[in-house]
Image 1 (cartoon, rainbow, N blue to C red):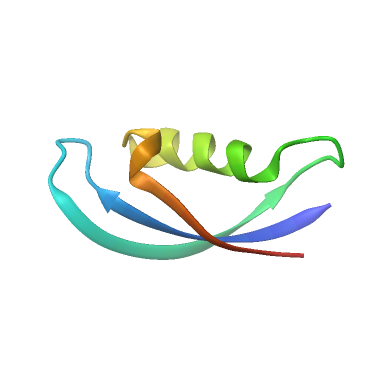
Image 2: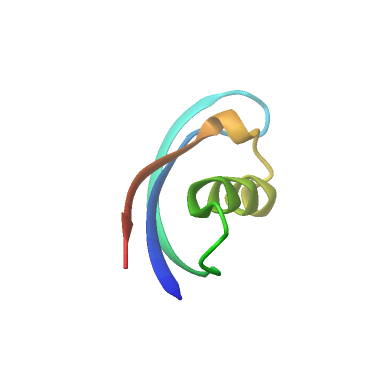
Length: 60
């Protein structure tokens, strides 16, 4: 299943506040925690702490 995740990044990797919003498609399985998986992947991709990633909306 493919879902579209709308997210915001609230700080950069140095801890400086920022306001970046975006959306990305993720492929997930039915038994997977979509929000947690997306938050972990986005934090890794942007090299920010998980607490800096805010999931705004999930669309199918």
